[in-house]
Length: 286
Image 1 (spheres, rainbow, N blue to C red):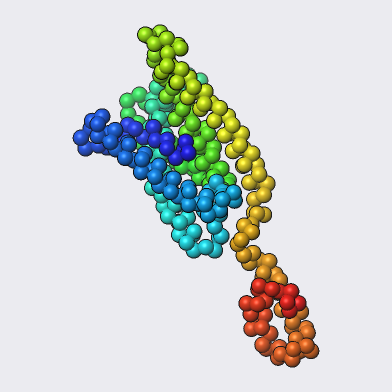
Image 2: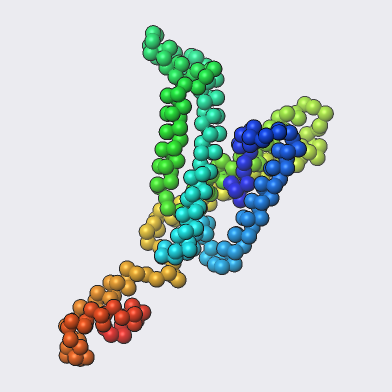
């Protein structure tokens, strides 16, 4: 839930995209966006939970069978949403990295030998004024390839969202804002036991607890997912591999005995084996 509603890092980009910038217009856009997201998340979450109850997975699409074409369409649409959302996150992360690199002190690269190499490396990494195109491209490629590598390590989206929510969203939503408020109001007119500061302390402590417990649970879920990877199957989904294996066994037995028991010509054995009753109850004929 924290990951779903964290958009603090896009504040400046969203505010800058307004045609007529003002606090009132930005507040209206923020409240409408968050309220709409809350309605959609609540409706979809309740529908998914009421459908599967205690068997509901962290990624609701994993509750549906692989051959369910409606769920497949939903997975495709969700992939499109991720592809369209990913650049927005990359913009912020890349901009922060470029700001950090531009503000690093020049002595960081003092170990590089004097001459053109040092000056070129300084302009490439730590240019304080303008971002060089090579650095821009390399940072983008590193971020994209790193994200791709993380995505290829697991087929469970809930694990990725869990780590993002605990390690990234929770500090951004609960810890960093309250810590900034406490730092800015320290030594002012507000006492440490004032209501606003106590609320800030409570929210920050809550965020730390959620981050620690959530990270531990995400690690446990990741370990279980990797240990059972490729072996779990939904009980209500048809196991086509076992059905086909039983079908092959049945057909080989029928091939050897059908002429003696049922007097069916061998050329009809193929159609006889592919009868739906064989798939549903292979032991009936074997």
